[in-house]
Image (cartoon, rainbow, N blue to C red):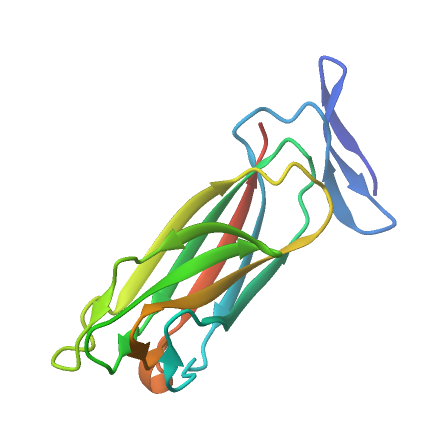
Length: 170
């Protein structure tokens, strides 16, 4: 069955029968969340020794295709079970949209082998304005700022790190 919801002549939502999905129209009120996507990393990311200036993908990514080029995308990142086994090693994580770095988070973060499990969870919240309806990919990378580190995400393979993106109509 097909149908649509119109208010004051503006189509808010309709059913696309061919693709069996809901399609949002121009009448959707600003601030409405119209799409939520998520990705999880349950395996341990453990690249071994990482030297200063090295950037490495941790394997947590999410493909996203906005419905409107005017939408904002609210991105949430939670990295679980973080450790680094070397003293005096600073590192950070970075949120990317395709090849564009959007936000550094977790810096400065100094590790110590005396207590390499402090800050075992790290979070990032970011509002992105990609200005497109073309699919892109959000991803998380680790960057070793100085020294040599042995970073890990999802220590002991019991953690679960997540990447969530929500499209909000503007």
